[in-house]
Image 1 (cartoon, rainbow, N blue to C red):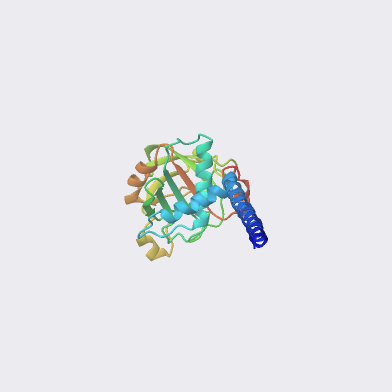
Image 2 (tube, one colour; image 1 turned 90 degrees about the vertical axis):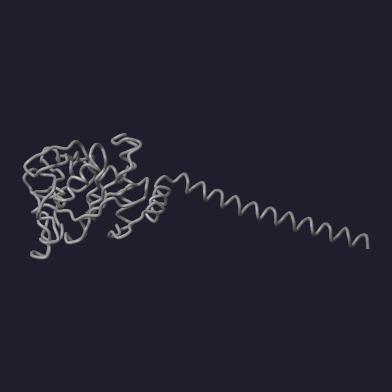
Length: 246
């Protein structure tokens, strides 16, 4: 009987040891997996962007596509790391030029409060397309919109009224914005009435023009070193932008 008890005890010890070892290996693998995810800057950033996206209150506004938002956040964070914008910057404006100009395709997002401050119509350039944007340029007098990340500068009153200077941050894609006088301003042709008569909004000379009534409130909100991202699924831009590939 004593031998039987000793034998059962030995079997129990071996089984327990095996269970602990197996459990330790599983936990170790989980820990390693978590560590890899945390150490992978891009994966972590995308995960954080997705979490933030789902926390934003879009309410009655159109919902910005997750893929576009992720790219906007990636560039926004890289601009912050490069000290092109202040560390406490929390406003991000996104223009999705893959959408019809009849849609409200501009979003001003407060990343701290996780809410949409403005969702508006926005114009593309005359030679960029009719209802849909198709062609983009960084060339002076092209009358085309330019893709990429911009940092907002100061305001002024010009021929288009209250306007906002934009500093293009993507070399070769929009870095001639100041030289070309690509600015944000209000325009009467960016309106629902224009859409009803023309089935599209009017077009600018390359500027992201917004409705006249919203020009001042939007510009005063995003002026002085905040980020604007003008998006279009152009493979050359997406693979070349330093802010999307840093």
